Image (cartoon, rainbow, N blue to C red):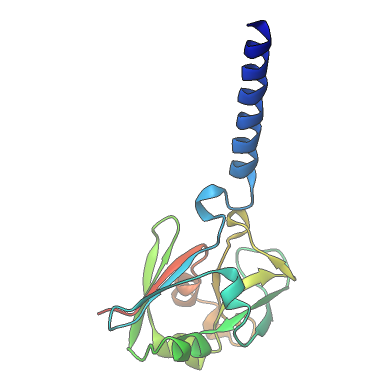
Amino acid sequence: MKGNRNMLKLLTKMAFAVMLAVIMLPGGAAQAHNELTVINAAGSKTVLFYKDLVKLPVTEIETNTPWTAGKHVFKGVLFADLFKKFGITEEEVLVSALNDYSVTIPVSELTENGAILAYQLDGKTMSIREKGPYWVIFPFDRDPSFQTDRYWSYAVWQVKLIDAQP
């Protein structure tokens, strides 16, 4: 009987340790798979993961941001390539973050200005704590017009959804 109680205690401790480890993963259990949902105007919904995004053409932007110290290298996919792949031709998209911050961004601002959906910062995947897993990045250093509240509001981090439905 005593052996059964000791075994139960051991199993309880092990289960607690496993749950704690999952919670402590970068991004936590809720975002462990780094899901990104893309919805085109027709309502076609695609769920992407990090492994899907890295298969798309890669672009790097080296820039300063108001939220990081110094210049950093962001790696990701150009919005022009992402929108082409999913047939997004609308004038605007809604970009939403894990904390439910959302902003409507003109597609032309993303495609004509070389914005990327970044999935790496300085060669490493980004945890939620590091504004990941995905972050809208403009080449902020390229033009002073990018260093304005307008573009900073477009620089959504912790992106979970890109929705082109009207």
